[in-house]
Amino acid sequence: MQVGIQTSAYHHYLTRSWQHLLPHPQRARRLDMVSSVLSRFDIVGLQEVDGGSFRSSNVNQVEYLATRGGFPHHYQQLNRNLGRFAQHSNGLLSRLAPTLVEEHRLPGTLPGRGAIHARYGDGPDALHLFVAHLALSHRARMRQFDYLSEIIQPLRHVVVMGDLNCTPDQLHAHSRFCASLPLHPVRPLLSYPSWQPRRALDHILLSDSLEARDVRVLDHLFSDHLPIAVDVALPTSCQVVLEALHKKQTL
Image 1 (cartoon, rainbow, N blue to C red):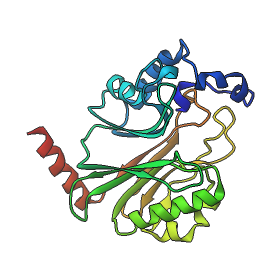
Image 2: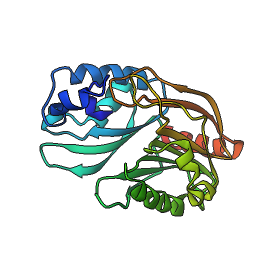
Image 3: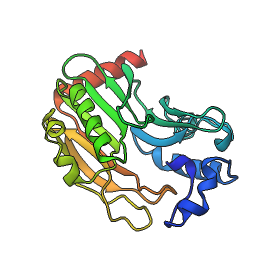
Image 4: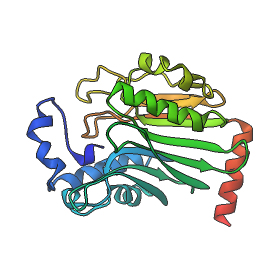
């Protein structure tokens, strides 16, 4: 999301850097346009959203996008708390209420990277979804993959999505992470930089029990990364769990 900053050239990192600290009158309009796109989906993972501070005009962007996009459930993970100046966060928007949501502070030399773990349903056929934003540093990223591997290894139906800040080759080089379920990546999609994408840094990874359908890159939505999307086919056992959860929540 890059907290709603429009970036369409490398020099904008410099000329528009002030928007990381100060509010911008067009930010609300951009969020409205983003929410209209997100409203097409059932679950959305967000990185680099502001949880309500001076720079976002005290608007919690996760809550705002959930309301405007028609998502009855949302969750914000605050990763860098700079008080009233910035509330740098990950976010989750969902049409179905997760049974459990956990925050994970990912290891690294510099604090501020995290992952959201949402579980839908109970038992071995529950669906587990992770929204993660990993470090730029290779060494820190390897430690973060190790951390996530420990959590993912015993799980059956898993989706990991977010800005992993690594290419598919770098991802495959971490044998422990790739063997943890195993996970297999959705067809790599070029997502960075958004105005002329050349690298696949953003990923949706699925356990081998899940099937990816209609994998796509969405239109440029202002950030320096392009959003990616996938339709996922669930195995029957997982569908039964989610249908039971939905029925329970609508009674």
